[in-house]
Length: 300
Length: 333
Image 1 (cartoon, rainbow over the protein chains, first blue to last red):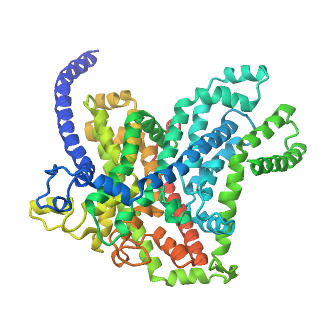
Image 2: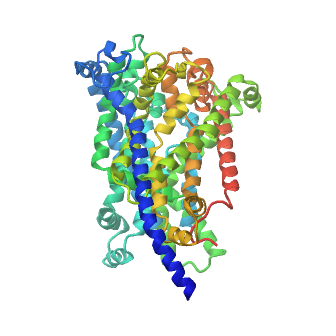
């Protein structure tokens, strides 16, 4: 008994010094994080800063963060040079259908894995996850050859087709979204679905009328991640859309790189323009992003 | 949509026959509802089945076949046995690209996974204020389109005028040539990767927040200091997340392409093929791309693709094997 009392006494002492020390550590950690996050922010600040400079200001030494005067003219110049309206249209023609197709196909497939109980579904599901391991390069060449034979090069078909089937080797999207939605669907109360079945609702009706409306948070996450994935996609447009008229934003930004006279302020203005929509999207839907990414990790 | 439906029916009826056979054999007891559910389940996952067969399995097997052929896209593939593979092992650029890729996998991945772990540990400190803002800042680089980020880094690491070397100059250091210098090009790439590892930070943070406080308190009562608590509570509890990050980042590093492509085009060397100064940025994915889409050596490129698959699987297997007794899964034991 006495040892217990002694321990408790010692712990009380330790707790008071502990809280003090905890406070000190959290101040130190705070300072460390301020420094680190400044370092992480610096490139983005520099991107914006360069975009509002003249060419001479951009290479001034020592570097200046806030130029005087601030030059906004790089933006209209960059937008014209990268043919912004057309590039934006091309990106949206790709991204919007891809989001719709992905939401539909991965919901249907996830329903088949989560709500309908059939023998062997878990084994097949493991196969779905296994395809994540496959490098995209392994399927690339035969797909390219096939699409070339079909005359699909310089069309959006090769880019959109995978999203119809929830399967795209080498891209995280397909199988990963099936996984994410399956996990969410598994959490929907069984009673709701059984009641609908007793009322004679078909499985498709249950999916569209009950399961999907109840899964809005997960669907929004999948939609957002798909949109960003397509907005950023460089590889598929590089391979399949060789016609400059079809180039999406991700390719159009490169215009400034391949030309002879490199104009850094214009280059950075273009980089800001393609990044800004995603940054705004991120600020509005930050929680969805974090949830989606955190869920990825839980698969491990 | 029509062909999809037609194929869906075909797949479903194809499976029916097999299911009936096995029903007569082993699984005599399958009831009507069970059988109905099997058909229904397969019908629902049929988009995936079609995608798997048509967009994954068929092309994967076709590229395996191509890897044994001479295939210049315009003529039909011609069987040449193992010639592509012998050519591959005799190709100095193959070894160069393999070396560059392993550098990225063995140096870049551990480094960015480690830095991300450090940041997430800082973010997980009890009673930290402003965690939301910090988390936002560390995740922001992930949101920036890869092409824009790559162009930004070409600018930041520009030898005479970039911000990095200018700042180094201020403290009296003459900065390197970065992407223009074969010895420093990969360092630039890794810097970029560490900067954009915010998703890894978020995954760690999720895992760290899942560690029960009670475990830390118990360890503390047992007299464990911060290091022992980190070593014997934190690390085992988040080991699945560490393994997950190593595997996913590793797989991505083996396939590394876009950033290296944009950078090597941006610094404007090599003419038609991409690969950076003296091929210092020729990663495996770029070597494959050059062969497939610059030289149209589809057979050889297929051989490279299959080599990449085998290497990826081997590396993952080795990592899983090595971690077998080091990763702790709740509910095991």
